[in-house]
Length: 299
Ligand SMILES: C[S@@+](CC[C@H](N)C(=O)[O-])C[C@H]1O[C@@H](n2cnc3c(N)ncnc32)[C@H](O)[C@@H]1O
Image 1: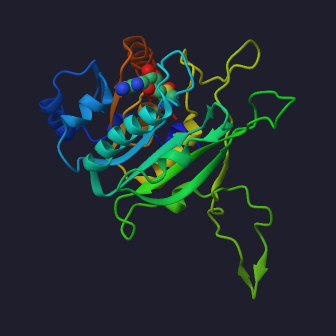
Image 2: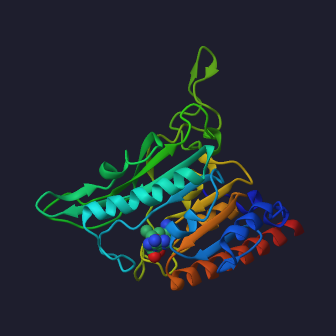
């Protein structure tokens, strides 16, 4: 899914930072900024409460799952759901009328009730968003198990504000891996020549860590979302120059994908050490892409 260097036009991206300057008027100076986007070291709820209605085209986020990760303080379930409702309501308010919200969540354990309870069961219907579809992200590798089936998927809920009028760029995410591309019916090709609909089950590798198995894209964050997944979400659900939000930025994966796909970006992250990781990652990414583009221009 990732775009080739040829597709990237970082040097020629729209330099008009109008929307980013507007955001700075509301939120003040960011932790980090470049011509493509802004990172704020802030609680996302406080940040979103300071933003006006209908500003964002698309939000992707993977929030804390309330499972005791190093960046979480575990809350009682009701409190967790209530907190999710509060920030999702803010995402709804600041989303444009034809915008969308893509929410990636996994499972949590509820004592005496369930071991791998999908978080989607609690969140799908707590806001005014319309649920367009649930996507199963099948990631191949994960926890080994003997007493239960090894969990190998998370979900992405694709929410809309307006169920009749929304962005969906199917041709930009078609799967080129078609089994019988030359198959014809009445002399006409049966398959779309660009590729097939990628369906609601996405097989995309997780970002792994550890000696000899660490993903090449990995940075030092315990829950990094893969670029391939983000590229698919952003290409499908927004257009060039649109403004993408990730309220739980982590290592900056959504920011990187937004730049690679010619979108603008705003991200919030409560931990300064993760903001530093995201900043370094984005700076390195831009340097790499500029170097690639410079090489291409010599060809
Ligand atoms: C699941 S991780 C996101 C990982 C990210 N998708 C990536 O690819 O790196 C959730 C992130 O949310 C941050 N976080 C937790 N509570 C927050 C809050 N109230 N506001 C902003 N960020 C928060 C955590 O520090 C953590 O980095």
